[in-house]
Length: 495
Image (cartoon, rainbow, N blue to C red):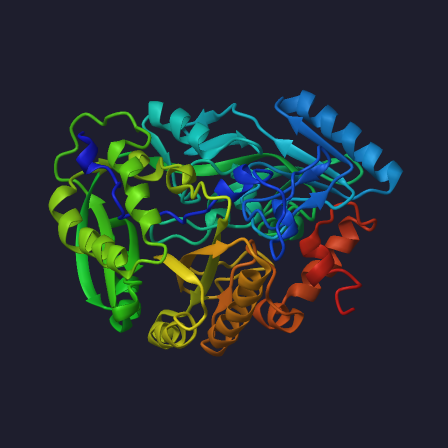
């Protein structure tokens, strides 16, 4: 397989999360009008992928062991935090953008583990909570398997994907949680609970998309599928027609993966869409090893970043995606398509940060969503670089669910200045978009900047009170807390 057959250049199904702003923190002293997040982080200060969520923590521990060793460490840290009356939260790569994986004045546990066990007879793999998706792909690829659903980039943690119940671009699946058979969870008291849809189902469903607020996952049993060669097809269409076409394509038995993009050039903003679908290749042959990012993937970053402030480069990029890519791309393995790190398009600019939005819209209201975006985004002073569209089947399980029926997910990446003014503009635009999406019968995704009002959160997630009540029943302290809990779910949220 040549590098030209890989999902590189600028055509990609993955959500793009900017971690560069985090790496750049401390590069210079804060200036007037800059956000405090740019200050040098002391040893007890932590942040997330936005670079805008500095939190002072009491203790940070990294857990690399698995099994009994990891359990022992977790129990000691939990007991110490409870004794001190401190909150506790666990995470992996901390790619959320609203301090969901941080605990102010609390204990933060970073899980970083690699051991993967494959049960080919059951079509399952067992994965420790802190494994990254690149570890899963490496293990499964060697045995001829592939994740049925995974988050779109390979440097995220697997249990974190479950805790935000992220979706991917394999079709026609629901979110990642739909492929998790069971898991083991450590409660605030250090007890280990095995849960699934049949055993402790309430705990299983609250933990799925529960942002680490019900306990710490030890490991998960997850469904896998066979790896194979896939061939792409490209379709251009008016953006307003995408909502009709995408569900039909996603539900074709021959289609295994699919995504879309929208034109973000200001001169033709959201007027045109591109649908890319992958089907089984006629000739499978020898399945090559899944490879990482190649030269073209790295080169794409240059064009991608040059879009900031340049409509001409945005037009160039759209031309590459719609005219050049269909002539270049051939078959690629399922695992190779999935095996892309988010770091490929890292911004590496201390003055800016990448901010994600994501909205879930009923397919029959997608044209209304496009119209809303055209009304709100161009006049917002925000720099939109990319929109990736995915199909998400209904989620019947999680309590804080965003897919109450089939949905088209619109993943938007903005390049935002690291300034108070830009943050205020982003908040204003976000609230306008959320209001318009709610009017379309859709919702917004929770792992990103906490700009939604409390009223918007409650309307978007009507089972919020049920989730909060269950969380208090299993964690009355509560021990598992984060700024997300404090702002939207705690007893003091109304204040």
